[in-house]
Image (cartoon, rainbow, N blue to C red; front, side, top):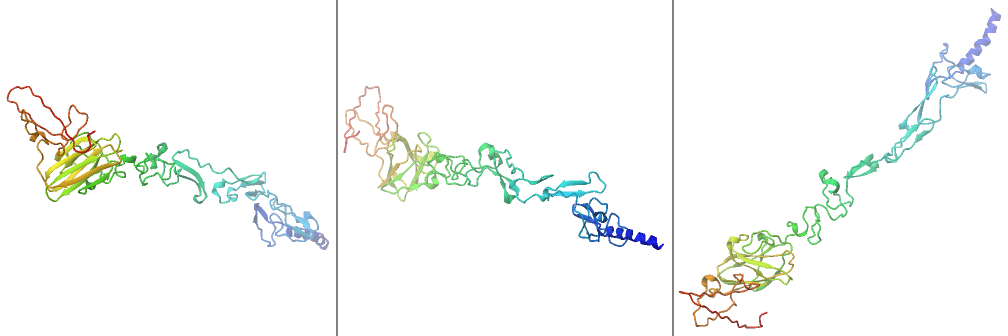
Length: 411
């Protein structure tokens, strides 16, 4: 018994040394299943490295996944992971039973650098982390501007605003998606911009250009509520630029009008003169008691410029003078003067035309007359005086008229 025991002790010592050199059971990349060093038989090898040894074989635990143990300087040294591929982004998995025993799972998340606009990093087996092309943010929508914005976490698609005025274009049908900038090449053109009334452009994108935009480009006296008061004995210089045809005329064609007014405290004679130096201008003027109502016109003339409207013994009250013409007339003169009231001179209208007496000369004047009627045989209008001939039976009638002029010759 003693000899047998002596023969077994070296074997027991060898087993103990082998058990002391065993690695733990490696089941995955860096994961180790420890078996307690409790003196019980070790399933799969030594409990810990560091046991005494003389050869590598004394340290082996017959497990693949914890590597090949070796003997160094008389002590067992644990083996290295046999499935380690040296690539940080892979999860190295070792199996004692599978074939092959090593398998590798890529982990893309381990490669991502937190930067969205440089592409999506991927883990490639056998290679490691790789970068990809930056993201393609083009959504093929002409109404958006596409780009990658790091602070937004990737692609952003903003309404198309090429001029940077914060208003999206109406081009490409983008108005259907809220676009309201009618010129996306000019940052000064957008809704809410100031309408320039003489540049041929719709500056505020309201669909109206220059003088067609009666809200932004109307003259101060374009309508009755902005009528400019006339000063007695003076000349008011105005314009038809920026006016529109707001009211029906009492005579002549409908054209843009500028409105003036005056107020009489007592009955007065009133003379209105209307003129314009604009070449080719045509003007019409009338006097109304109710602004904008042609039915209240006391007199209307459409044969100017120039033109003169005279009123005799005009009662106290407020009167309105719409002056009509082409909207391009940029200079307009309105003269206004009053005088003590007098009766209208005979012959100013057909209703008060004096009779002509056969064989006698009747003297009259055009100085105080109005331009009431358009003659059929004279190319332009002007002051007119009327006479009447009363016949009780058929007669041959001859009328001779001659003019004398005070001041410079006419024409």
